[in-house]
Length: 112
Length: 117
Image (cartoon, rainbow over all chains, first blue to last red; front, side):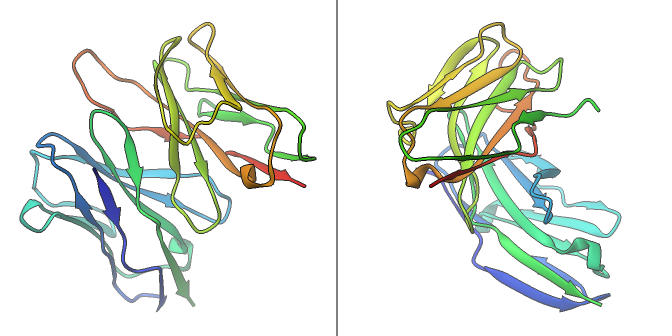
């Protein structure tokens, strides 16, 4: 069975603070993909990143960065210098051959 | 706009009625997925199509639910004899997957919010 755990239900920060969203996954497969999606108040899920299980290289995209560590089965997401527009629910997801499972999400609120 | 579209965006119905939702994927995408999302939870997989073939159905998809993708383009999700527990956001996603690949990146539509009274 696969499982995605986002232990942080809600996080609140002040603008310009850095924030890390945690994601821990469980899988028996050696081949899988990990994703992060953003769901702003409008409701539409927005794709942020996809990593495959063979690529542990960390990735940076502007203020966003991702830390993939197979040893701890974690795929954490960091927003540097957060902005009010970053306020949303963020979902981590795991995809194997059979289906895609999402975590419960972390609601991030960035206050001005 | 070339993204995934869903219609209607909102639907209010009475218990026992049938409802049908439509999803139009990104035009060149061969896979189409349906998910259900309840308040405070992540999306839950319901079913997916590769072209017109329905390849997988979740155990969440009871006999009252049926999905079709007759021409490998748009898809419909029908719920018969709706129950209050069916109230949720129904999300559609599409992706482009080549031979031998496991699931590629899925792009989501805006969802259809269903309220069963």
